[in-house]
Image (tube, rainbow, N blue to C red; front, side):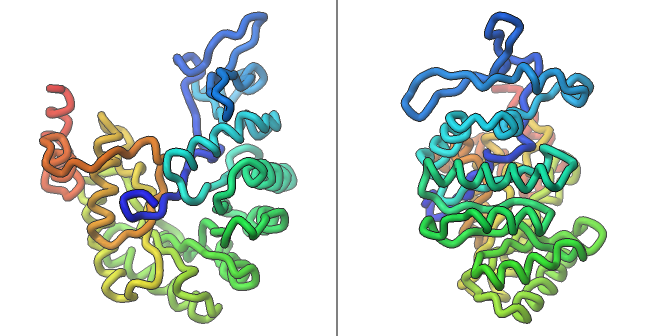
Length: 324
């Protein structure tokens, strides 16, 4: 538990990337390059990125997916280190996502199975299967050891291709995360968030999913693109908690709020604090990115004002960061 919240570690996600020419990609000699990390035994190690860096996608974007590279290479020691570090820093559940690795479903299913087996071999935390493909969720469940605890399916929403996930959750007795995305688009305000999640709650009723197995996510979006997004999320949480009571779980990808802004850790810290106050009992976040909450600090208050939409376009927050 972290600050009385359940933490879902988000770092075993194939979308995680670093700059191909940045400081996290080092020369290993002999034409090889790698990503440095510490193994579970404390030794300095390197994930070999040589082949991944040759990808046309990497060369075009300048970014390399290091988690994806570790999964494709079947580097058990690297994945174990990432998983173990998250648990050591406070993660209660580990989110596993392979969707970005390959356009071929057959490959994604095998990647998910290998990732789940590897994570469970080295840590005891439950796993969240993160995919838009119901078959990928089934693949994860197929190899999952329930002795670790109830798994989480991430996620269902009103998009027709995702609705079968409710049946999977019912049959597996799994927790299921429902996000506020609509049938064709993201929600634009509080009313759409609450309305979309209300429809999902009714569907969960039809599938007889227990309240304690339900997790709702009103969707955290970057305040750098709309200064009201932070407050939309927080107000939606308050309404949902009041409407449905205390048995279900409320969460969000809190680090999404800070994309494109300076000192992201400070904003993520403040967002976690505000979300907890608004009724969230679960956090999707890298536990290493959240420290002690210090609401009395000037920087924290600047971040809170930006998140509540009181600092339009985050001007005061950005100026504060520049001054520091």
